[in-house]
Image (tube, rainbow, N blue to C red):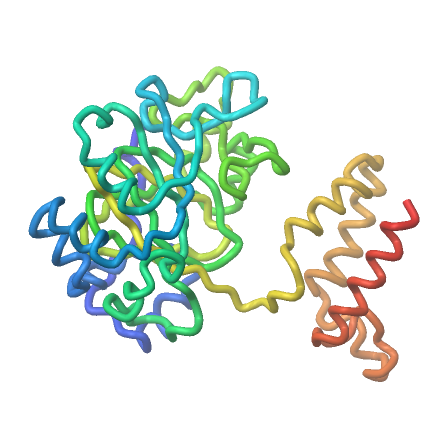
Length: 338
């Protein structure tokens, strides 16, 4: 992928919580937050040396098991599907953080790609959050989650939650696309994913334009950001982003949070139900259902039941825990009868 024409992500310096909330979040676009966590003890340790960072983590490791991926040199650090899409091009297993770090430092292992994905710090580094506070979020809003490995590439994917990702060590390049580019990213299976979210099947470092011709249009909308230790990036929910990590021991800490009630479930479940019930219909019927979805779900015409008394609005009433339970029961009864 030629990044010479990619637009750089907007950068902000000296960001505090008020500025983030009032100026950055309201843009609904990615933002680089330069030096946001430069004062973290973990970042300071990484700037001293790789060994200092490893010592910092090992001293705080409580010995809990963590999940890690291992890829052979042939994958070039790109975690992806097997050629037939019937598996993956890496192995996975359980270890401890200390063993993972020692493996990363082992010269005999440095040609393999080793990667511990999103793991809550309270699980194995319970002191981390207190020592390395996130200045833009209330502590109870989002748990810090850590990613550690060597050189790796993660395909474009989106998160359902808003995200702040902070580089502790190594380098991170983010390539981002707005959600509107979904048709040009050639997305893989929705139900069989590498780490929970569907991914683009285009190799950004060697795109096959004959196989993926519409990707050229996605490139026109790409944003790029290069981050060093102490830098962070804000990625709003549903922005596609690819991540390239480099460094013998690179570490990133991220925070996911959402403003929708957790007991409502994931919107991807609604997408799956739509595939089951609507996607096979003739075009004119799909269009008719789109009108109903625009009215009831996306509220293009305002609140759809405002003409009814509150007690009579049923499942289109104001969202409350009681209403969400009612909707779940409605759906479970309907699905159980199929």
